[in-house]
Length: 251
Image (cartoon, rainbow, N blue to C red):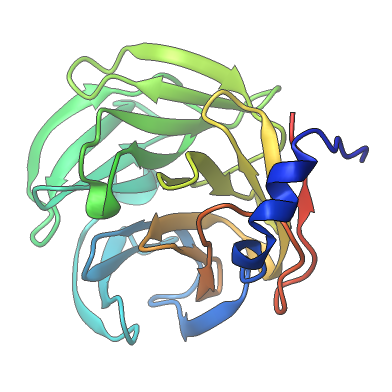
């Protein structure tokens, strides 16, 4: 890959803050085996167990299981996004009804649903302005198509506000509102970070192939067979000490 060094002065100026990207802070076993989606509030991690049709609720500080709720789309549930007000959005893919469900984040009760853009939708994240899904104005949805796409979805109608190709496949994304980046991977040990219009900004290596991701409090939570809490500070760009080297692209 060819890296573009435009913005080098900015990189040097804030380099100290960059150093912690990808550092592992903690990790926990996934509840119910393989996990394909994550959501986070300021207090809890929501983990979608593949094949179990359940979403497990975990303490964000120690990974302990505090409850669970039914997956809104049963075995075809894909994608989680926590939005302030105690709402957990869940996606249904593969077969009708193709929908995004707004559910209660504790009980799983369905408030309403909107149509999802594609049978190939795989992940969700809140396009927000604060931790815990504060100020969410749209859902970000990743789609398994060629090319991979990121769609901005209206939470009232389900209509696509905008859609962009992504620089790599992302299964269930995280939205980092501090850096205004989308993070994620598709069964890959390379986690990519790109703008909401699809421009690649940074990558880092993970300890296992990643499916699900979520973000709050300058941390990314990424998962497949474990849930990893990793540093994601504001302004990313140099080599981390744990997960591998960061490759930064500025355009």
